[in-house]
Each structure stands twice: as C-alpha cells, then as structure tokens.
Length: 344
Image (cartoon, rainbow, N blue to C red; front, top):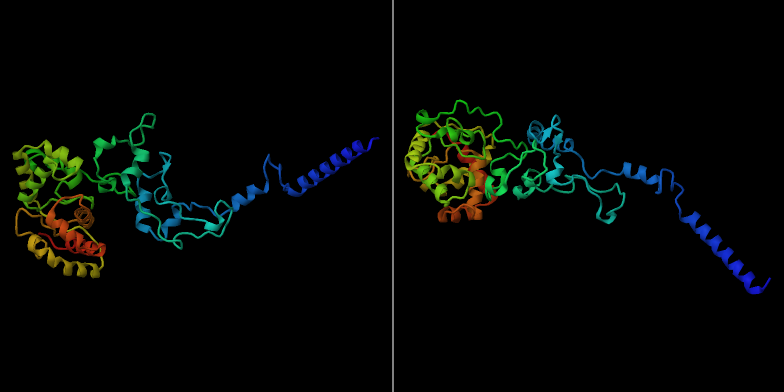
C-alpha cells in the first residue's frame, strides 16, 4: 500500500476516534432520555425557585387588598378569570443578577428585594384587557378609551383590586324628578342617593354649599374642570336644573365616613390645616358659599384632589401654590383630619 494512502487512513481513523471521544465526553448522559434534549433539565427547571409566587404569597402583608381582590371580578373562578397580583405589580420572586438566564435558586424574594411597583398609568395597564377590540369575548368588559373617561385615570372611578364601581349600592331608592329637586337620580350611582358617596374616590355632596356646586357644574360644562363623565352630565343640564340639584344636595344631611386613621395623622393634619382655615373654615366648614366645605369628605377623594392641584391636572392658581408646598405626608395628614371632622 502506498505510504500516502496509509497515512490518510491513519489520519481519518485518528480524527474519527477523537470525534467520538469528544461526543462521549461533551454529551450529557441524560441526553435523549425524553427527546432531543438533556433529560435532567426537566427536573432542574421543575425545582427552580418560581419567579411568580401567586396571590396567596401577598396575603400575609396585604390582608385588606387581598380581601378586596378575592371578592372582586378579578377573581372569578366561575367566569374562568383570575388575575393574579403579579399581573399588575410584577413578579414577587427574582433571581440573582449574576445568575440571569440560569436555573439559580438563590435570587431574593419580595419584600427582601424591596417594594413591588404600583402602576401609575392605570389607563395603559387596564386597557391591555379592557380596550374594545374586535374578537375579544363579550363577557370581558370593554370600553372605547377616548369616549369612556378621556384622560382620567381608571383608578379615579374604579378600585383596582375590585374594579366594579361601588359594588352593592342600591340606587333604586334614589330620589328622582321632583323629589330630588331635579335630575338627582342620575347622580346617585356615583354620589349616593342621599348625597353620601359609597366610593371613597368620589366626593360626597350632602350638605355642600349650593353656590359652590352650581359653579362646579358650570366648570365641568365649559371644560374648565376636566372630567369626561361629569362633562357629559353637566352639558345636559339647564341652569334651572343645576340650581335645583345644588339646592337638593345642600339640604341633605351630611355624614362622616368611617376613616379609621391613627390619631397622630389627625393631629398632624390639624396643625397643617391652619393654612386652609381662611377659605375652608377652622372646622372644615367654609364661610364663603362659593368655596367647598371639607368636613366629613372622603379621605381618598381629598388626597386625589390635592395631588391633582399639585400636578396641575386640576387648575386653580391659589390651590396649586398651596398644594405644591405640601409633602405626601402632609397631604395624607390633612385628608385624614378633614375626613374625621364632624357633620357640617
């Protein structure tokens, strides 16, 4: 046999042997146990610390919010719809940054890793599921965003943990027509049949100054106050209707919502309220009928209102200047103080 042929054969055999040895050495013993992949990876992935922990994980620290969610439409097993906390707040379990894309079990969990994010833009978040689109199931509530509430955030009207509006409110007894002194029946769903809102995100109107209410309705009608829902209602009212509505609500007996806040918050709010007394009264009852009384108003509504003045979403030069000087703690304290004051 020629030498060059013998050398070629030796080279090919050597290459084959090295290739086979490499295949044996580098191929995991569990390869192709279940299919064309490493079989042991199934057990490793299954034993990996989950990134998503589930809503039960949140219950211990967020009892009230978990209870709202558990009773709301976001947890409806009959409809086959359960929206877990982490769908909006992000994953509660994480992995070490150094072990990204690895099957590491050493990543930190919330709350050790810090607070989970609270969505600021609820319009962007909620419309991922609720914007009206062809092909979406009719059982899933859908809205045309531009016509529904304009630029208003969803959480202004909906409790994000139980999104139905004022669940359980009976509006059948709402006064209408003459009995209400005007079309108050259309206001009852949000502001209550007796002018006491059952939703803390909306203002109670009972006992409020009629002059203030008339001006507020006019502002909604002209667009000076931006609220798509109120604008539609206000534009349909005549001046006489607005006057009757305002008189009706001024005549209602106001009530103090249950606030359950710490006395230190109320005390801090009382100290800060001295700057508000000139317009809204020392006891939260305005001395000027054109300005709103704050005593007994919902805490959540007051917090949202001050935040709107602070951000410029609600326009009033005087209130904007005052609100910008308030810290978040000041806003909470003021709201707690006025919410806990007695009936006007």
